[in-house]
Length: 245
Ligand SMILES: NC(=O)c1ccc[n+]([C@@H]2O[C@H](COP(=O)([O-])OP(=O)(O)OC[C@H]3O[C@@H](n4cnc5c(N)ncnc54)[C@H](OP(=O)(O)O)[C@@H]3O)[C@@H](O)[C@H]2O)c1
Image (cartoon, rainbow, N blue to C red; front, side):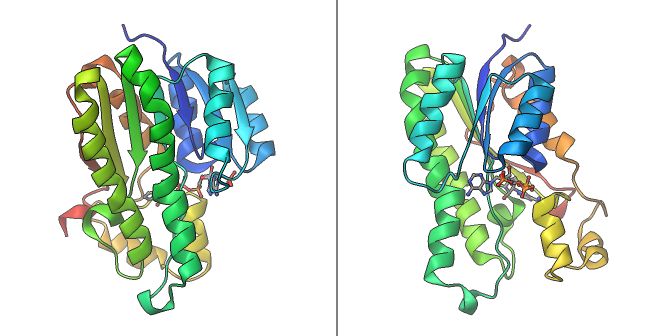
């Protein structure tokens, strides 16, 4: 029987993060949520009886620290950190601005890194912890016109491998999940703006379908279970075969 864990999940106001939160709550874990949309956080928090939430922008310098403090106040400890919040940017490389680089690297790589620095001391002391970084198949295999996004997500793979090595002796496992295309707001925005075409996109995917958020939630649930204790430092592609070329 897996023990109930205290879990902080970023980007849990919608999309993949909200589905992960629902699944882990159903499994009996205690959840602390965060995102920018307070209304969505309030609704989800009530629905899943979360321990609490803090709304705000993760890219604001003092927010990660405030978030971890607030999660501690509400749950007592953080056993599991799920770095899920992220943003996509479709752009030919020559059109990427310095500001784009700052924003994407900050949210997709620097913030997850910062949150790791804020939770690992306690996990080491407890001699148990799980960190799951939600990367992207773009970070594992590359994606034309998404070089900045891909670079930020590839960074998470290196981060997970290095932390996994550093923290293994303390019972802490760190992994990256690399989803293929999931039809959340992130993808709908790309479809609506014409950056990607639905039929062409599905044609490129070997299984000819989108990943369901539930599939990612189920994998997260497995990775934090006792059965997955031996899985650490891994970069797990959940992509309907997209990584195979
Ligand atoms: N969808 C895909 O096809 C796909 C594929 C591979 C990987 N991923 C990755 O999966 C993760 C979740 O994406 P998704 O598809 O669920 O996207 P989504 O529906 O757009 O949700 C993104 C989540 O991140 C939060 N967020 C975004 N910017 C934030 C900021 N500056 N501060 C705080 N929270 C912020 C959003 O909160 P608010 O809405 O409240 O602002 C929302 O909860 C991302 O890391 C993404 O890169 C997605």
